[in-house]
Length: 267
Image (cartoon, rainbow, N blue to C red):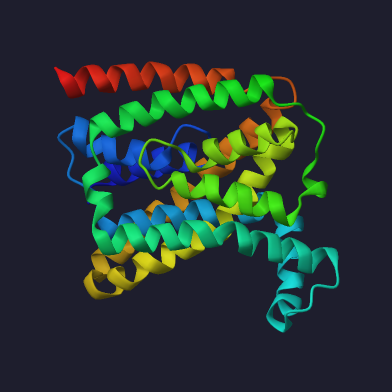
């Protein structure tokens, strides 16, 4: 794959993975709206791995805390804050794994990879983000995350399997509806992305092992490195911006892109 194509894919994935604008929607649109070939499964997995390392590094103290709680989780004895965080992240991931497996077995995902679907989801869930951000109070912090809220946000996250919805965007919407402050809502969304990306990467990795070759592996490694730095920059930018700005700029972007996509789809 040409280096420019790899660079473009990695930048798109890295920048959009954690911003509430739908990374999967943008990756689907790239070949759909240009003459570029579809990037294929190997590159999809690679850019997700890059963003995974970026979010793990950015929230490394929280990731280390959750990792310390895994032994408690395996023993089915939650005795510390670390174990509880690991338990909440596990519960929040279960819905998206179940729905993802159902979609894969039924072949639903291919039916949803259309410009019209992405356009409608951009608009609908952009409006949802705007309403929840405006109406939701900012009285809760991520330290007060509960098991009930973890399951609730996990159900919201499962909806993001529809391209154009945005995994980070819909989790942030759910968290804001529950009253979490903007910065804390984004933090919960990012932490929830870690086991979700690992699960989806493992699922896609089964197919990658069958089709990968050395050329694809080299391209994947390049894409992973670029997406890591792009995702890191996007995380730093958004988390700092949220201390003084709402999610409205992302809503405006979603609405504008959604309208453009619907115009293209129906004309």
